[in-house]
Image (tube, rainbow over all chains, first blue to last red; front, side):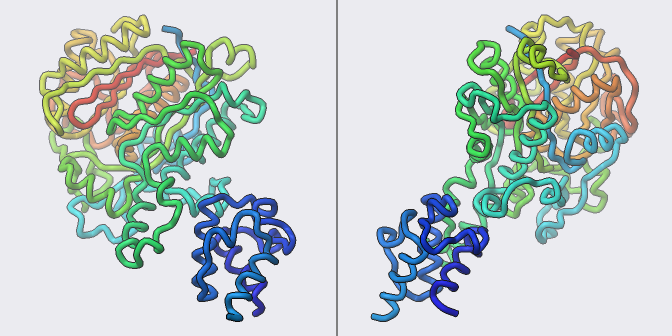
Length: 78
Length: 409
């Protein structure tokens, strides 16, 4: 499974939203109206899923799925 | 003080969800007390309750929201929706600044909280859901219902043990009577059927331990009483001024016309044995409603099924009603579905409205041999009575007395 698919799967399962709602180029706030507590939960879930450390400043409500993919892939590559 | 109209009823209870199903079961005198099945409660001294098993079927709430809230908020959201539907109100057409919400709750959302606390100790702080902070506390349902409907007016949650929701309704009426809001969602919710909450209820010491015969366990005012049984659920009504209700040609289900509250102030747990402060609250409510004792056609009893509480309740009624007491039908319908603690008064008020509408007094279950014979108990089966005004008594731990007078429109 590629990183993007996995990210979408994690967020979809966690936030109980449909995978189709998570658009590659839209921010999380625009696509699914994510709130601050959901962001805290999302960061923790992504950390667990990918075994990387993420700060809440790196992944925010204004991140797109593509932003999150490049951030996580960058960390995995290191 | 001005009387306030009730134009919509939303009920979520072990005896049914929605007022039709609820009333069909209440008037038939069916018991919904059973052994707790949600978790293994067999080692608790008292492990019976009125439970709601099929809330999801009636729920309009998304999974995304459900994972952030406790069961008591879920129940309140469903009850609020049912009340608004019954009142024929689309909240989008209301001025959100002039809509309020007044709810009562006694213990908070422990099904959510205890799961997260377990995770805190097992997994550390990262194991705790970030929603914990906003899910467990008693005012959480007020917040969730407000967010769901965009309610922005003056609102309150009352935490006053079992008297909470009747107090919230009394408070809400006062706010509406002062013309501060256009409408209020008033009532209460409680979800005590969880391992920790059940433990707290058990340590209170007033629960019936008749686990082998759940339907016969809750027997207020009976010689063989052994304490009360808990139940879960929510009761929420739409309240508005009579004028507004008439202007929008709403079906007025009844009026809230009087409220009184006092405290015994004698003990941390028990009420006073003399019933004097409860009698004073009853008089306050009658005077507020400008109602005479002769006009009261039904009394909804608190009925804790504990000798001290039952006897002091009777004493208070004797002090106020004197020789009239024998004529007035009285009952404690919560014996059918359990004592909803902070939501009990709201359910009692809803039952009183339905009883007045149908001219039928629902029964007290298990009242086979009254410990005192000085009341006109309606037991086992409903009985027909023409009722124009009802009095509802709701009492909390340590002797918090709360009394409401309601009447036909």
